[in-house]
Length: 446
Image (cartoon, rainbow, N blue to C red; front, top):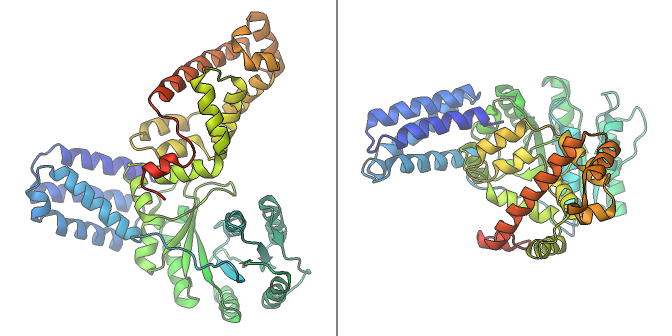
């Protein structure tokens, strides 16, 4: 989402780094480019002005002007101010084991609210909570069915309601049901509208007053730009929200909502949705998001993704196989599936500092390529997967036919496998393959 903003900021930084000592004129020129980049990204103009004013106030002082590396000092100031703009520190949701917690989700139609309910439920289910999803959207056709479908995908229960029910009554029934059955997290999916209207607002105000909620989340579509900030302001003034969930951060819009909503409303961003998959919901860390926007990567989130998806025993087994030079196509296929669990490859690569250009190249890779590779490997016999060296021309023809590919595709795969194996051996010699958790400890995480 922030690709254009990242490119513009990096261009501005490059110019500043090349100037040696900075004066006020050079700083002002750089800040003009930064302000223009923010406005182009649909950041609220007051927020953009305040942001660059704060940077200038710090940048024209002795901290930068007399520094031996003024360009780097200025970049640090920009990063610090960006972290501050996004909320300084991550805010933990108000949930606690041993009690029944309740979340109320609000938002406009199309914001991704119903899917966000399932993502939250899956997220907390992994942490040992027992979630219940409650449909309160009795107006939109198929809204209840949609919640049942995503609830089923997440493996969580959905409260059954009768047709023609009233949201407030459904909420009361669901609350009592959850209390009686021992659910530890109840997530209420409210009705949305295409725009904020009095009828909608009065309904959610009534729901808000009915129960004591641990969190009242507003789900915001990041791709709607400044309209999202206006919506957040109206909901906060009328209903009172405790936090925001940003959706569609993987889209190609300009992302101004993500940079404006915290400063304009004063309400923290708690979660960010970075893809359509139910696992693609992340706690929002201002410092990590600032790193992504500035093209500095996000190693800690990458570590967490790897640790949540990659099996420790499998990682150790792989390390041993590479060290013994016995890595084969069965291992390759297993690793391919592990990586796919972590999300789109270009998103993963973007989290590695300095790999922005590689991520761009990966965007042009057809996701179906993974399926083609998988088809070719599955068309091999067990012996061929374990010992790729035995694959001759006749075997290549059979594999190609079985997978619906061309013989040269199979040849290309075999060559790529050899190269990958070589790289893994080199990485193993350098100590680049580490057991699960080890890299996190190296980064200072407990």
